[in-house]
Image (cartoon, rainbow, N blue to C red; front, side):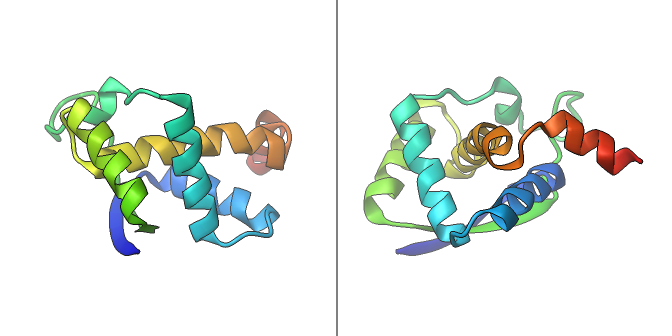
Length: 121
């Protein structure tokens, strides 16, 4: 297994941590499930994630760092997707984590709108 880090938004990190606080699994298991889900769904990379110029108005600022362990098989799949989308694997990792958190949030946390409204009080 290879350890790597990638950048994500603070919001995504907060969502991931909130989901994990309600699940009885390690972060590494969550990441593996996220990768497997993404590969099975044949998801696409959001064009905004492919913007690399920081002065572009649609650039997504990624200020949080996430650590992940990747086995050889998943690394090959990540590299293939990255090559197909003309980007690095870190962009693919961001997208797959985002997608998986969006799928898991309503299942694990319930109504996300209600959570947000409670937090605003």
